Image 1 (cartoon, helix red, strand yellow):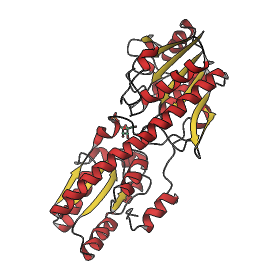
Image 2 (tube, protein in one colour):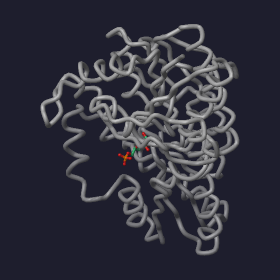
Image 3 (cartoon, helix red, strand yellow):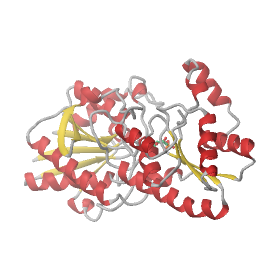
Image 4 (spheres, helix red, strand yellow):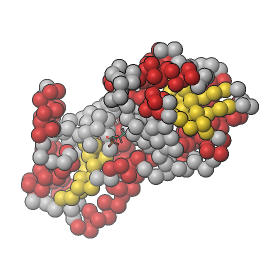
Amino acid sequence: MKRIGMLTSGGDCQALNATMRGVVKGLNTLYKNVEIYGFLEGYKGLIYGNYRKLKPEDFSGILTKGGTILGTSRQPFKMMGFPTDDGIEKVPAMKETYNKLKLDCLVVLGGNGSQKTANLLSEEGLNVIGLPKTIDNDIWGTDMTFGFQSAVDIATDTIDCIHTTAESHSRVFVVEVMGHKVGWITLHAGIAGGADVILIPEIPYDIKNVYKAIENRAKEGKKFTILAVAEGAISKELADLPKKERKAKIAESPYPSVAYEIADQIQKKFGADVRVTVPGHTQRGGSPDSYDRVLSSRLGAKAAELIKDKDFGKLVVMKNGIVDTIPLAESAGKLKYVSPDDQLVQNAKTLGICFGD
Ligand code: F6P
């Protein structure tokens, strides 16, 4: 008999259910008797001992279902050392729940912060396996996270839809894509959607270069321009400020987000008809695409194999098309940023896409 705990933590994404299904299908192939305990709303469920004992049928029909059947919540890693509002010490409480249920392993589907907590629990002696979830694709050590490709597809669809209306009305459109710290979704969706300008947090922009890109298109007779702008895109002026001053400036901004500021600047410069479109959380919603269904099923199957091999303290990753593992400790605390030298950025520049640098 194996007793496995599972939780989904942090912002949701499209292939959480598909990944859990992969883990459970794998376990049911490798073992005769498996009990699955699903903790509700991420680490909160583990802290408060809120769980559901799940039956195999709970994992039927969820390959294509977005969201998470367990619910999720954000429990910041930096707060793990502090008690809950009702005075519960989080780490001891999580260990107690794990031990009470006599779990053989805890499987954590989560992004960066959640995997840091997974590593902490592993260092505290629990058997933990991490699975790399996030639309942002910023987990260090894996080429791909599940959720990313589905989010890129949605952001691309948005840019596609904007293309036709931008062209009809000869307008400049700013499409704001998710990603506060990293620009992977914007970079991929921008290229896939044929954006003329891509602005991402890792490459601070000079607005004058954006103006130039719009002028160049006008000289070529193109009356519309599409900008794909990450939520965390930042101007060179702001990027050059010390962190504290930068944060204060951003907090003081009269604009709801950077996309609106850029739109206003372009409007003032050219007197142009500028519009902003924010697909927002639609990028995290709906069904996983076929790529994510395959990826999450493979990652889930690997987690089941790790449990069979008692190979704990690992994050399951995808490297050069091969499903592999790295120690949780190796990935914890590092983000995978877009490098300005990344071949994808260079290819995009060769295509004539402006990054504002
Ligand atoms: O980390 C995933 C993500 O969707 C980011 O791309 C985005 O900036 C953030 O979460 C939004 O967070 P929330 O769901 O708390 O609004």
